[in-house]
Length: 485
Picture 1 (tube, rainbow, N blue to C red):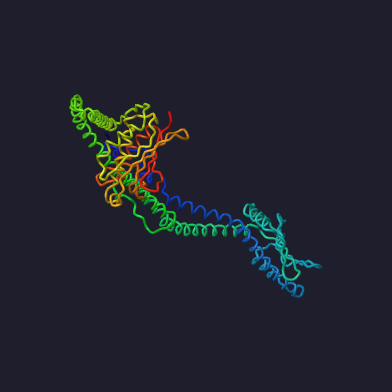
Picture 2 (picture 1 turned 135 degrees about the horizontal axis):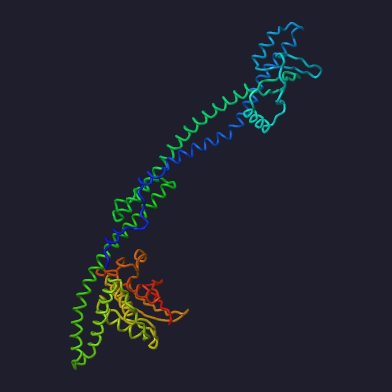
């Protein structure tokens, strides 16, 4: 029989990796989160960068055409020839233009011009321009060759239309300066936003997840230590639910491991006891066989049953030893009448009864089943002993004048054999129903070990059958199902 310590110390194929080692190999969740936040903010800034540059270009040109329009009104109001040429050159310098023309519906006036103005390379009209055109012309300005001449047309005050030619280099330099400022501002916003998001998510998500991972690694090293169960907080979000679920899982697993360890130790002890008990029973069997040779009628009647009981006890010890050595005893099925087996099991179980009890064997005499007779005897013996032990005087059977009663019936339907064992005892409590067929989980008396029903369930599963607790108005009613041969 394998000790639980050997199992717990055995390395598993799904061990949780070392968190610190992973952090040295690849970026942590916090680092990835920071990089993603900066990237997303920069992507958003890029999406608004080009429209911003296009709007800056239009605003820059509108400011200069507005200054040119104001100068055109002043020059138009002055008497002819009264505007000095130096003033016109100063206006061109302030506006950054090469020529300025003002046009009305009926006239066209040259406001100012440099000597020998260059030819125009490209034109733009600010009076009617949609966003797509603005973006296209802005990109064209950024990529233009040095020295390109741009003619700008815009509406001034009243019905005046301003035509102005400029060297596009000044506009391009201003646009690149604006782009640099936007880039620096975007980086600053990205760092601030990413830092705040990083701190918030690190406190709310990353640290709790790291705590969960570290706890799982620690619990994996000591799964039987209840102190390794993760403590739960007051959070009600997904992280809180994960902590609560993990705590329940770890607590249940730790309890199951402790329980399995105890069962393994108990199994080793039982195997040792069964080994010694088998030797004692073998000697008792030899004496029983000699007693059976006596001519006394009572001895002749009781001795075969005593020998048969000793043989079953020896087989039980050998089966226990085989189970401890991971050797499952092979079934020996045969066809036999069920009613005589029920009567034999009743005589063996009756001595444990603390109250007057009787058996109501309603199984037809000719009713046969195909199974391992000795193993089925263990099933009925355990069921009857449990029922008799449960019907103690405290439940009121003697006070009411009733006697303990166990009724056994059998029938065939739906391709299976059904056997019912019904008693008139106190029944099974709701708390015991949940783990009724688990070892050491339920017992009908204080002296019981809680193994009887678990043994019965294992035997019936080996026969490809099952057992369950059926509904009953009084007492406990067990339903046994066996497949028909």
